[in-house]
Image (cartoon, rainbow, N blue to C red; front, side, top):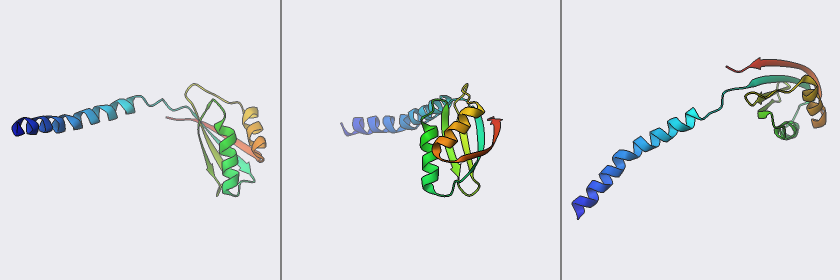
Length: 111
């Protein structure tokens, strides 16, 4: 009986890394392709409260995948979901709604 338990445990341990590795590969394959990256230069961003306000407003937008606020440089990086877009007027409106002034917009497509 002890031998049977030992064999069962050894079989389980031998197969566990294989199962674990295959689930990691599946999760990696399911990541979405990158979308457009928009860098906004904004006046008035000085504190964590400012950053949270911008993240909250942009986070409600369906096209937005991720938002990063760089307080030191007054920049907001907006990563859009693949296939989604936002025009300049919509971006400016969201910045104003957050309580700040938009200076410029730079767009790139993620690779």
